[in-house]
Amino acid sequence: MLYLKYKEFSYENNKKIDCSIDFTGILSSCATTQSTFKRLESQWVGKDFDRFVLRHGSPYKQFNLNNGDILYTWNSGTSSINIPQSATTNIYGNTASTQFYGGGSIKMYCEIQFQVNSKGFIKKLAILKDTFGMWAPSRCHETLE
Image (cartoon, rainbow, N blue to C red; front, side, top):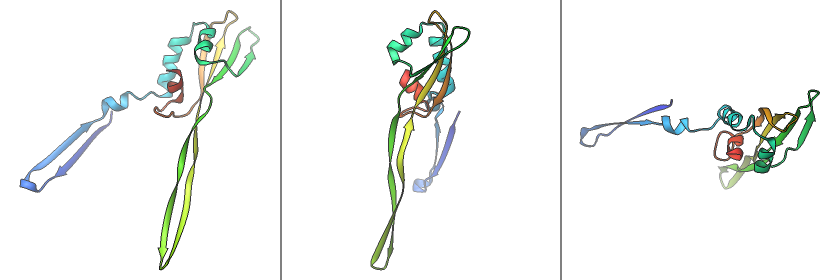
């Protein structure tokens, strides 16, 4: 829980103003990788893997295990956010010098591994990679919601 207390003093009419803001509900709605994993596990373990594929797309990799199970690795594809450069300009007399720094892009990605039995049902899953998303702390949450 995050509780922020902000005090402001006003000398108008000699009144003291005390403001308190509670952000509990706002932060508790954030989806983390752990909460996303729990939701995906309850939603997909025991279900037919074909249903997942039809809904979210096919895996890009598979590995056959000796016990007859297959490990499938699925990813969301990569999205990126472009970060603009920052600039600092210094003025020396009649001359100005500008330096640019930062910038680039941040890649967002979700990768999940499924263990599927010989009948096509999901036995286990694991989130292998989960960056932050565009609007949530978990890219997997965004792409698999």
